[in-house]
Length: 545
Image (cartoon, rainbow, N blue to C red; front, side, top):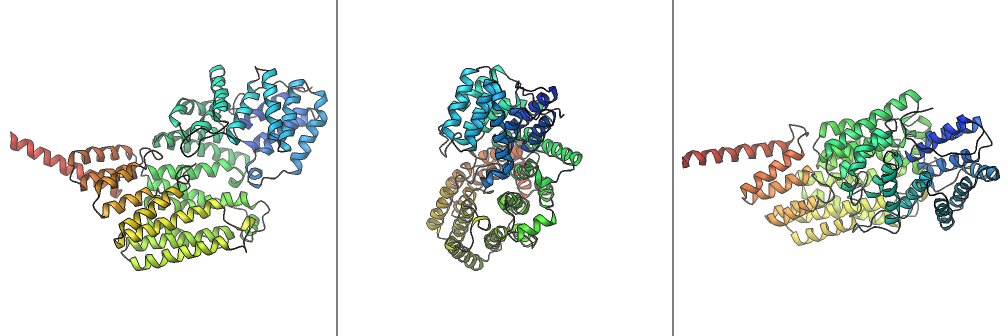
């Protein structure tokens, strides 16, 4: 038995008290998104009573929500066996258990309409069954909920939130309700889920993902210090679990997802040294030699799962340096990658290297080289879009190709700006911003550095301080309190000669980056500005006296 993972309880038909206990544990773990441990709990339940239909239902649900299978959109033999066994044993179960099993059977057949009918009938017939309501609300939020790019609720959002709001009132200590509430609101209204973020971790302190989830809300609300603490606590929780259970990091998806998120959080709050430490931990997580060999040769049957890990492991350091605009560091980290990586990783490395080398060349004043690389990147992406020699597991996803297309537009915009072709640059940046709108957000943001910051620098080059400031301000709705944007705003005021506003803006920046590396150039610039202008104010006071 495991403690500290929530408090779910659903009375099932079984002749064994231990089966009931392990079933409740598995149900709690489903709400934690800890599908591996949920599977172990349901298997343990069967050991005590192999005639319990709901234990087989639990195995099916754990496997159905397991991330590798979601990414593959496939069903394993174990899944099919489990749901068939649950159906076979269902005549011995009570009526409400049979609703659960029929609903799972509908999921197995990809019959959404029937699933909804069975779950809604279950909830109607048994209105006190909070577990059914939670599973249904989670399903709606996951499959038809959320918000569009204008932050308008999708079809299932309001219904799902209504169910969860009622559960939060009736069962304020249920970890599942707070967990789903956070997921449902984080992309549009993170502030509405702050109470859940402050409460959730204490409800299931041994679940790494539950401890991690408050960080989503704090990050998206711009409270980077509290987000950092959530992610650091989650890393410790998962590290302890991996060590005690002797489980490989690759087999605990939350562990490396959390490491990537804490690095992104450090990037927004100016903690370069800390962020590099976490990024390097992620980069050094091992694949077994067999997995690495198979991945490099594109022989792994579930490559999307390993690619999901490989993408985070290999590219978090480049992404982290990219957020700071440390282009040579991006180049170096890409060149230093292992040789035995997958075809997809090599393709992403190749194109990202063109982008980073070109941006580094611009930093060094080599516009001709940057222009050559920009044209080469654009041509390569055009050819790549028509290349049919790679398919399935070997081909980059549409999302990753879109990432590179955004980078190509951003690069060409920077080249045009430095050449003095401002209108062309603005058009390219705006195209990149439109293409990348969904990529600038995420868990963590997929495209690390908002293109608006390149647009702002283009306006700074022509001394259009107001439009530069607006471009920086446009970053804040989706990166609240980001020091990168706040520093740019302060700089635009300073260059415009607006000392009072610049002083306040630099103070805002320093408040946002109060935990940043003290030797950061941005920190030193802000401190120098405040010191110099304070001395000017003191001199003026003396003259008046």
